[in-house]
Image (cartoon, rainbow, N blue to C red; front, side, top):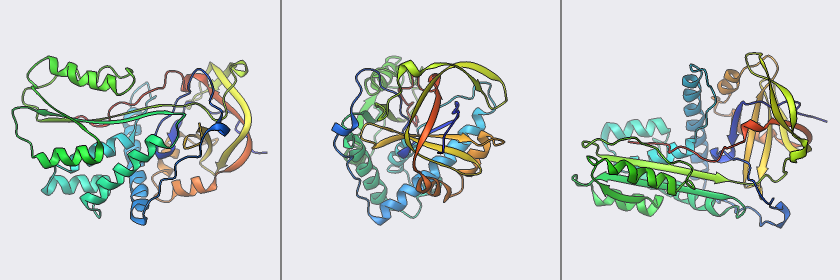
Length: 328
């Protein structure tokens, strides 16, 4: 029997780069839920998924390096938010700016229609694939009311990204309140402030907000939570509330890490917990993920085992939201 004895506050990834958090209240019984909606992707769109993942891991690596310089190294990011917001911006770019964005997203070989169609299909499918989850993917464009913007830019982003478009006066203090209210409205009132001021010379703000709330397919029983020692990466020990359950999960390991998949609802969404093996560091995990083929190999290696799973409760407590991925 393979088992995971300890899982710490490490690297939390969710399939399709969503980050899930435990839902309080009545548990949804997975067997009573419809099967996940299958996202039918053309061969070109399937390649785009891999490209998107490569960008996501590169972005995560850069954030990880920056956060490692700080004392508090806990953070959460949504690469999907960033790539979608950049794709929206792509529709208004040209010349060297557009070329640079294409290279950054690693999508220089794709047309505008390819990119827009891909995100439209993905967004629509994700919103309906699991009725037991609460998922919101919202986009907005706030523009300087004194500057003329090509109407085609608005039409593309409303047609493909369902973006809210609102002209505003960036010189007025109230404008920040309008933008912050949009964020609150689209994150169940959990992100209440994304900006503290605006500048009269600002041209445009593009925002993306993702909100996810789901219920574990295999729920942790509160009575199995107890005080236990948790060893951090630097070797110090802390006493934490440790959740525990023994159940069948998809699991794999290699010389770098252990990986366990924790599904939500009808299993359309999952959290993948990555734990560095003994002698390895979080940086080793992040480095491994930079290999283009590695993530696909890890996912293909996942198989069902009975797993002894320990997770600090603090990893999940209060984890309900994502910051907007891009603010211009």
